[in-house]
Length: 526
Image 1: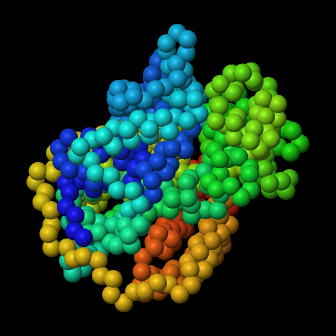
Image 2: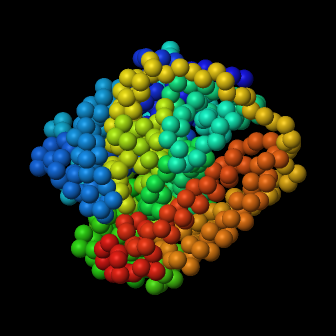
């Protein structure tokens, strides 16, 4: 089936929803999600959204914190732009019904997280992302110009390649005409032709065995744009959240927000020692790359599977009031955070690179935008400052909406694109071929391309991945499409990009720590 729309939005997190609501005032929007609209990274964002609100905080302090955390890879112009525009976007969220916690005097109850020198995190208890998502979803579902399709999976971006023209990554003038979309419930493929397409598919966490991301975070958007010959950058910088709840077998790993450490929680090793000051003078409030490596190192020294997060010295009533969901989750496992230490372990959490975009979210492919975690904007550099991501998403969604609405009148839908060709395909004889490669992919990335890396590990990972790529590509060409097969294909693309870009960075920088270049690391000795 051929579908024509003004705007195609791929993804249903804060970035995609914000964008859709703004451009819907100017045209018809098709918003798709490969699962239910509710299942995305925004939902799991506990900590909050960073923005300058009250003195003594100011934009220069926030800028400096971001630049220091980004370890020389940030684009200062973009950092300043996002931080200056964030307060206005926060006000828009509030006008749309998002509520942030306030103190008795009516001022916002601002939290502080690792890497921040001031309290600047607006939050709704420990479920900020869910609060934002609910408010935006309510408006999206009611908007007359927004058509929502759940369980629709974007397979490939439509470009001149699909008109029989040779498209190379070095080409200028590549254009996006829409996308092929798999209806997962019907098994059919729709040809969606759009004037403007925006990719807002979130992260890549599920290419690792342990992640705080939902299982649907398989790097789909990056793979889509990479295959369409768009530019991808900085994929070596994968942030591992230092404190996910240690509960083997649970996926995704339950996130223990960094705000707990901002509230006063302390990390301890199996001996009960507060170890973080051995690694950084900021202790448990050091930036995430340092804390994650420190925990990993302590686990290697002791042979333990986790370290402890100690909140037992904090006011018990205030602790539970600020973090009710964490308290409830831990209690379900027999852990009373008021009295017991919490077992925690690092988990894959956030990608700092992605689809290269300009200051308006426009990719290197004409009429194709990318916003949210899937995009590389220049804000995060080599390491994301805590709670800067939701801020980035709303600022760039706004800028992308303004820019695309200014362009849309000059763009027409291309009616010459062919429909999907199913010829020569059939059901795979053994699904185990897909599921086993899926597991092997996660093991390769976790074992060789994790918190600590080396040239040898990266070389081994690439060789193993090439075998899985060949097997999967052969299977893809002769099989009818399924979600697992398409996700595996995307995960392989993303894994390849992470490994190759890590091999090209001959130093330890930010989130990329390699023992092959131990003298160029960012901070304390490990």
